[in-house]
Length: 255
Length: 255
DNA sequence: CGGGAGGTTGACAATCGTCAATCAGAGTGG
DNA sequence: CCACTCTGATTGACGATTGTCAACCTCCCG
Image 1: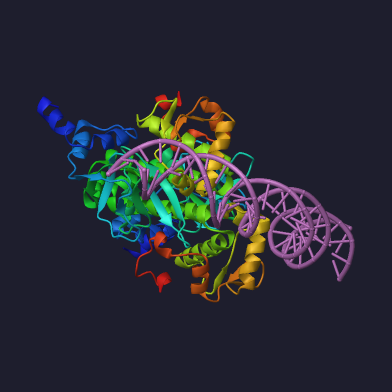
Image 2: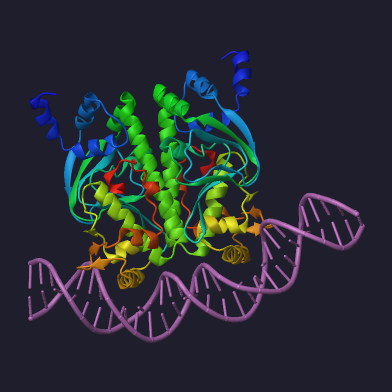
């Protein structure tokens, strides 16, 4: 690859997607170039902005470049269930866009940046370049695996275990994305949002976090700064086994 | 297609998969023939038999030909969470097999028959024949959509709504697969299994079903024979909106 | 007829939700 | 710098949904 091309490609804005997908399979230079060359529009998003609303017809897929977003559903009575949290490098909305009609909403959790890519371009590159297509498919399957773990989390674990589990998953995924150290991280969610993710109320989330602190499973410098002294103890309390994240065995995060 | 080929293909045993996948996209005769020609082994399964266990290395994908199966996870304390129910025509284990290591178990809910297809054959046909690959991808995305709905179901709905929702989803999927009439169906799950699917105990499932009966939302001729008098009333009670199943607008089930 | 799985019911306990008040910190305007 | 405001965190009192334990019933099958 020439210096010129490198410069050009580095400027594409889609590098986080390449890094993410290449984790699931080896790409050729041409694959990488094709990915980086995907037509797209970068948008700066404010906190709480809706990227997609349930029932919308979708035409674009959304890649996170900075900040955090959640996917959620509203049930009768107006209660909200967050079904996924997304960070830099993740394709937030492959699911909605490929299916055509959104079955859930996607909302920014913080301010950030996203890249919007036309749906047809995603499908085209996936089938023209099998390595990329397979990586995308695997990525949607890993999303599915995380959904399954979340079903088990809200369905069969008590509040303490649920919260500890979420703290573990989020921490490990942040580390994987290069966004946090092993010692801890800044949780971007309010306690109400944590409740929406775990099927609890904000009040009970607060009590549960305090209990985790009291038992020295976590420490907090500010309400959102989670410090994990002993990862193994927290993982045990959260019934957390990272297998469902399907990270590679040589991933430094698993060390 | 010659009479000879038709005969041969009808005998393949994989017809339910063709029907299922073709729902997601138009296939050519060659596509259909390639699907039906996939190498596979048909196995008869007894009730409760495990097809795959969590942490197993997987090499085959599993297609349901008859009977019902569930996917489940065991959490600390031994409680079980069913994350999906599968019926005739569905690829039960694309997820585990493509990812290589099972993140959940697959177990027969009744006696039945399955076809085991080597993983590489699935990947090969998916990329050699984009129509098939896209249909498979869409199918895994619909699975994902159902997972999301289940997260919301166990996370944010009360027992009554959860059970009513499950009854609606299962009934509609049975009808879609041609396994039930609109009037009702035979539930293949015990109340304990219903509890494992909804995050409740069998005792509470029982109380909840009795309450649904008392309110004339369902009737039962035997404990497992669910009769739905007024589908709309049950759907309202279950906060059930079939959009997440991503059926086609022209599907007779939606009429 | 006996055994077993699954369904049904009651009494009681516990986790979690609701309501409501207070507190802490960040940003804003004067 | 300070009052003001807003969001989010924290806490207490109380209530309700759901779980636990245990008994009994019903049906099917050998």
